[in-house]
Image (cartoon, rainbow, N blue to C red):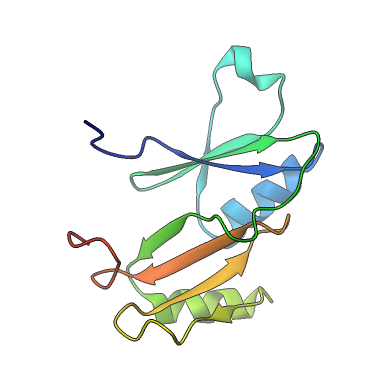
Length: 126
């Protein structure tokens, strides 16, 4: 049986590792973790925040994921909103879920990312 998610993979165009680092480290607060040696030549970067591991991999025929997305629980959604606004990251609100305070952003490559206030997620155990 499936127990947990090991990591989430997002795609990006080739040669954009520095932009990925700027966004995921400098803005979202992830730390970079080292990729295993055999995978380094493929490009991309791996990041971690708490128990969440995010891999951003190079895709030669890249198209951003505008519907499929990771959804991250955060301790303080309002504080994150303020932080992202300060960094000029456009935020998309979804008023259709009153019991799950959340919003969406796009990473620098156009991939959709959702943030949900901890304790209000769609998972009964959140």
